[in-house]
Image 1 (spheres, helix red, strand yellow):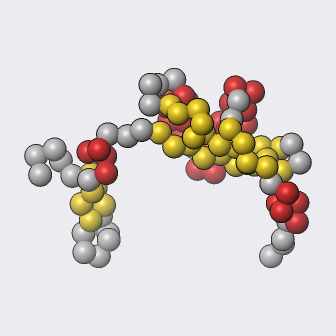
Image 2 (spheres, rainbow, N blue to C red):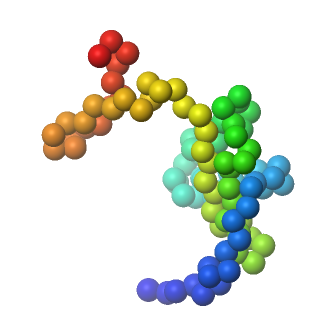
Image 3 (tube, rainbow, N blue to C red):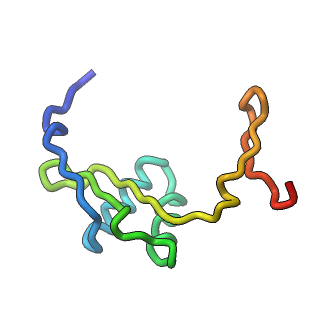
Length: 95
C-alpha cells in the first residue's frame, strides 16, 4: 500500500466554472459511468444548486475530488429497509 504524502497538503475550496470538466471526469471515473456526472450537471442547472456547498479537493493545483450537497424533497429521505438489508427502497407517498 502506498501513502501519498502530497495529500497532506490538500486544498479544499468552492468549485468554479473552470472546474466543470474536471468534476465530470472525476465523477465518471469514480462511478465507472457517466450517469453521476450527468446528475451533477442537472443539479448545477437547477434551482436546487447551492454554490457554497459544491466543494473541490486539490493537490498541487490538480482537482482530485468533488463533493456536492443540494436540496432534496423531504420524501426522498423516507426509506424502507428489509431486515437483512438486502433491499432498500424509497417509501411510497401513500405510506
